[in-house]
Length: 148
Image 1 (cartoon, rainbow, N blue to C red):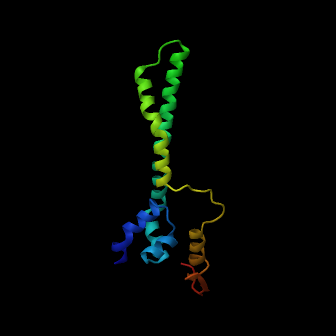
Image 2: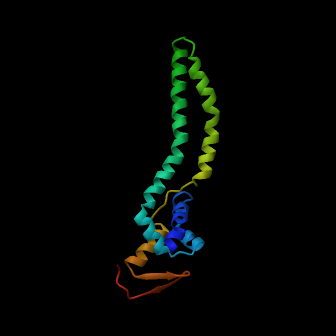
Image 3: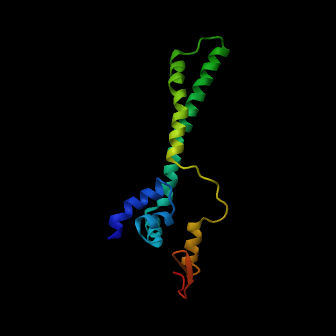
């Protein structure tokens, strides 16, 4: 029942909003382990990486295009020819948009920091699956369960 009710929203929160399993579990009242299983089955991590790459690539593509057009215009100037009107027109239309697109992308995709070591999600998974440590409401209990 919970899968049908919360799967799509959980996936959206993880992939697009870059939320942690812990945050999503609290918001949707779904067990973290359930979210991890859904994420593994649905390849959410790969989708998250694709989403981030897609969001950041538009600005980079536009920047590369403008840089190439500027090279063409500069070459014409160096050859003592007037730059192409279509090149100048395109530069004048795209260049002002670069800053707005970058700001939009930054607002959609939160800035990521280079993580050192293991993330809290990975540590929790290791504790649960390998060490048999179950965490309940920030209080840990060690069980005698064998890892699955």
